Image 1 (cartoon, rainbow, N blue to C red):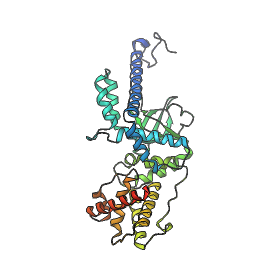
Image 2: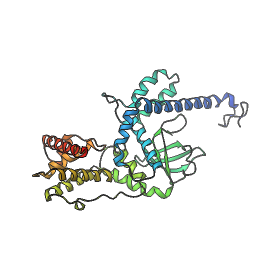
Image 3: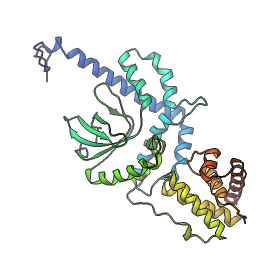
Image 4: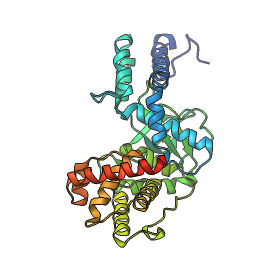
Amino acid sequence: MLKRNDPCLCGSGKKYKKCCMQKNESKAIVTQELHQLETEMLYTAFTRYQKELTNWVQSYHHVYPDVEENVTETLSSMLLVWLIFHRPIQENGQTIYDTFLETKIRKIKRPQTANIIETWKETKPAVLEVLALTNETECESRNLFTGETVTHLIPSEHNETVEPGSTIIGFPAKGEISMTFIGPVISNRPVKTSRDKQKIDAFQSNGSDDPFTAKWPQLLSSLLAENEAVVKSADDFQWSSEQVKETATILLEGLKKEQHSPEIEQLALEKWYAFTTAKKVTIRKPEAFAAAMEYALQEFAPLSVTQKALAEKYNVSASTISTRSIEITNELRATESV
């Protein structure tokens, strides 16, 4: 252990106490403060906003893969962190992180601590491919979403799986010494890296500015799934008419275009089948009903889409979507209440 009067390891020739000791002590204090603030933020979220977070997480159960319970718990925990940073809790668009920062920032005495926690606003989910271990506690990785190379701390309890070629799934954020992680972390050995890259590339292809953050629940579900979910096609249902079947096909194509999870696609077909089985409908333009069904799906799954966007997507009027979606929603609610 380095003592106060020993030569400083930086090579300056000065004694440690006259050189880097104070800097190291300051960094340790800032690191401790950041850890405490992270703990407070998560605790505040889980207590003050427990009802909202619980409802939000439950709304994403449709995208959960068929995996073991411990994996489901990890998925839920990682969704909570995503919600804290990216789901508005206030009408003005503020997130849970924003409200926490607002109440804490003036109470933080150390400027460096305040500066770092303010950068957490840009915290996004990431999948990192480990390039090299720089020392016992740090490694250099490439962000598979952005291509950026980052140096970060090796997450605690992941030393055995973190090696060159392995992947780390989590929320990297700025720390005092190196990048660190907020919330839970998942690490996979190199054998899964190729598969993970293929799934990430599929999300990359939809042309959105940031598909990884916007569709994090779906991507995370895909990354954690051991087996690919099998979705029935429109041919697997006994539809009441060819127009109803054509609508199902158009609906499925529309959902695939937005890269919704297989579970969402399956749910959409099941809801459309339930509606058309319960009520006889006359379909003149299948696109209108497909758009209405996709809009109505928000009542049963974690989707967020406007009538205007669907009108452009399916080349139908927003008023038609409004009328038909109300019809579909009311019928499905009545059917489920029986």
